[in-house]
Every structure is written in structure tokens, then in C-alpha cells.
Amino acid sequence: MVGNARYLPLIDTVDLARPGVILEVGTHNAHRSCEMIDRALEFRPASEIQYHGFDFWEHLTRDMMAEQFKLKPKGKAKHSTALKRIRQRGVAFYLHGGDSRATLPQHAPKHIDIAFIDGGHEVETIRSDYRALAHARWIVFDDCYLQPHVYGDFGALRIIQEEKLDAEFVGHFRHVDLGDTCMAIVRGGG
Ligand SMILES: C[S@@+](CC[C@H](N)C(=O)[O-])C[C@H]1O[C@@H](n2cnc3c(N)ncnc32)[C@H](O)[C@@H]1O
Image 1 (cartoon, rainbow, N blue to C red):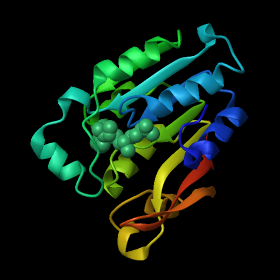
Image 2 (cartoon, rainbow, N blue to C red):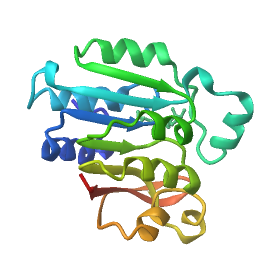
Image 3 (spheres, rainbow, N blue to C red):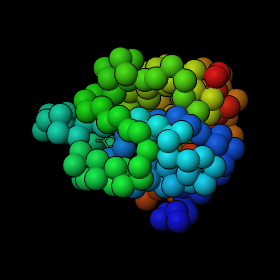
Image 4 (spheres, protein in one colour):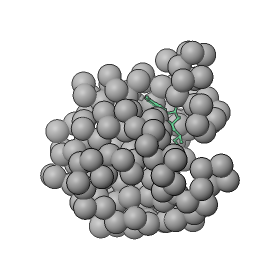
């Protein structure tokens, strides 16, 4: 079951990808991770599914929190909570704690069926995350802020434009502070 209807297009993309390898930047407490894994389990046995999750978790310092969360405060994620939830699914999983700008280039697998980019919201972070994941078969960007005064610095829209990605914009909603926002789905290079 999908907890938040706004994420239905993400689950629709899992249906298209029928993934063996799922990657998420910004696993947080693994709510979305488990929704993606549960959907993938409708197409494949657990033995054929791998989940790769990236988040700061316990590596987050106060200074980093101030820098990375100035746009959208979010409760500090717990590695143990993510671990417990994902372990129950019976799939292989790898959780990488730290700044995705460093961990993704080191640990992103060569083959990725679906990558969900939902970590840091600064353009520089999303650019770095995207470049480490451009080879994924499907890429879903959360947080495409559509207001010109926002997307210069925050959100995925600038990267989609700069990289000339052929994106489908879905799941529109109005963020209370940041205005019109949506997700973007890209059929990637892999
Ligand atoms: C919006 S939350 C993700 C929510 C989750 N994907 C879901 O739908 O349930 C963003 C997460 O990204 C993490 N994050 C932000 N910047 C990051 C960075 N540079 N490296 C790693 N994780 C980061 C935060 O710790 C936070 O848990």
C-alpha cells in the first residue's frame, strides 16, 4: 500500500522497471524504500532483488544539518529504523551512511534498474547525485520546484534542463512555502 498518494507515479515507475536493483538517495527511515521493494516483490522473488540506500544517518553533524536542511527541515533519520524495516522484506540490501556526494560515486552499483533521487535539495548535490546515477535504466527525481525564484538554487529542474533530460513531470502539488512542485521521471541511459 502506498502511504502518500503523491508518490503513486514512483510506484508506477517500479511497475515499468520491474526492478532487480533499486537505489534510493535519501532513504531516511525507509518508508518509500519499502513501498518500492514491496511493489518489486510483486514481479520477482526476494532472491532477485537488491536495495541500495544512501543517507547521512548518524554521520549528520549539526553544521551539516544547518547547511543541508535550510530549505526543508526533516527529522534526523535513523539507520536502525531503516535497517529494521528493510530487513523484514528479505531482499539483499546495502545501506551507505554519509554524504551522497562522496558515497554514491564510490558505492553506486554498475547496473541499476530504478534510482530515486530524494536526498539533498541543493542543485549542486542533485547534480552530483545524478552524475553518479546517469547510467540507471529509470531515474525518478523528487522535488522539482517549478518557481523561477526557487529552482536556480534548489530542486531537480535545473539539472534536468542543463543535462537536456527528456523528463515526464508528474505528481504535481503546491508546497506551502516553495509553490508548484512535482516529480520528474527520466528513462535513463542503462
Ligand atoms: C526528504 S528526505 C527523504 C525521504 C524518503 N526518500 C522518503 O520518501 O521517505 C531526504 C533525506 O536525504 C538525506 N540527505 C540530505 N542531503 C544528503 C546528502 N548530501 N547525502 C546523503 N543524504 C542526504 C536526509 O538525511 C534525509 O533523510
